[in-house]
Image (cartoon, rainbow, N blue to C red; front, side):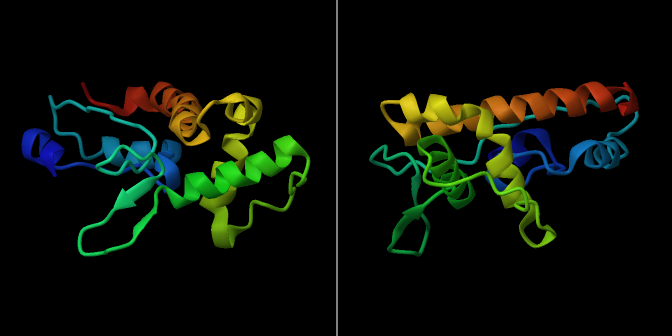
Length: 152
């Protein structure tokens, strides 16, 4: 809400765990909304909860007493990755089902960070950084592919 107050309307390209799942097509759709002589500010980052007490991976939601996991998608992907890393699970080649496509993609996109997360002193603290690094690759590709569609 604060960004809207400062910068005006926005066009959300995001999806689960903060990944830009709208991709190149979404960027093209967004760029059509940039006014002539206007600008495009792109902000990205992982979706992660932090409680008032600083507990990473949990969130206090307004009107709900339960302190709950956040981001559930990222935490589930981290659990899947932990199983792959420690050998208790295998990579599921059928993971990309259309009924849960984004979750399957989150799990696949953080696979390169398995050893990094395993070695972390605090897995939940490291998870947002691993997500960010994976997302930065996608965002850079999307921006580089679509930047010519921005009018200015």
